Amino acid sequence: MNSDSPRLYLSSLGLSLLYYPGQSADKRISVFKVLLTPGVIPILVVVLAWMLAHNILYTYISPFLDDMGLEPYLGQVLLVFGIMALVGIWVIGIFIDRWLRPLVLISLTGFALISLVLGLWSEHGTIIFISVALRGLTFGGAATLLQTALAQAAGKQGVDIVMPINTTVWNLATAGAGILGGVLLNQWGTTSFPWSLLLLLLLALFVAWCAKRHGFRPSQIR
Image (cartoon, rainbow, N blue to C red; front, side):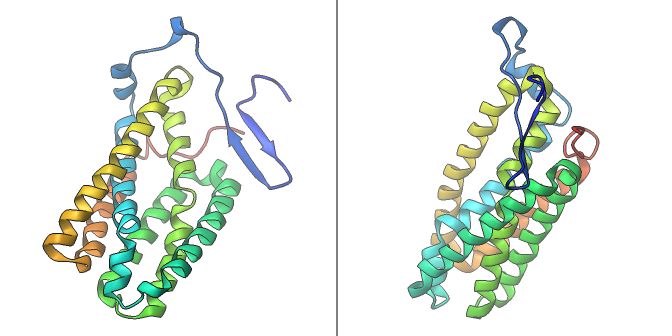
């Protein structure tokens, strides 16, 4: 394999990983310039909204299930989520080269529909288990999709800068979800979670849909 090739195949798993060589200090560009690169800000907005939505429910899954009378099944719910997330990672790994943009839109739309279902019919245990399974499937490849989109938008010169920014935004979303979820729980209870998630996901979906030129586009790697 050519050492300059940006793609490493794991043929036994049917997956491909993107990698980019590090940049020397004299070739790096500023954080400000990276942020102004077309497509970067929309992707980071999607990262923030998507991870906020995910972590609100994930952080407060125990009180949510408790209110639905399913707290004894917490372990099983998390197991189902984890297994389906692994399946999602596998599926994304196979198709991301050709269908990055559709996969992002499908994942966000699926999560939004799951949130709507939980808001309308969360009193049914079977629906919650099915929703959790589909939720894991839509979330499993989120990191791969978002990091790949950012790497493509920032380009070779900006990738070393944009990845730490992505990590910062991801961590802010995790912390912010703990705060926001706590406020929602104290003020309106767990029934407010699905509707809050739905609003965040509709925002992420709208931004992703509009960022079709520079943000979320099919991979150019062949």
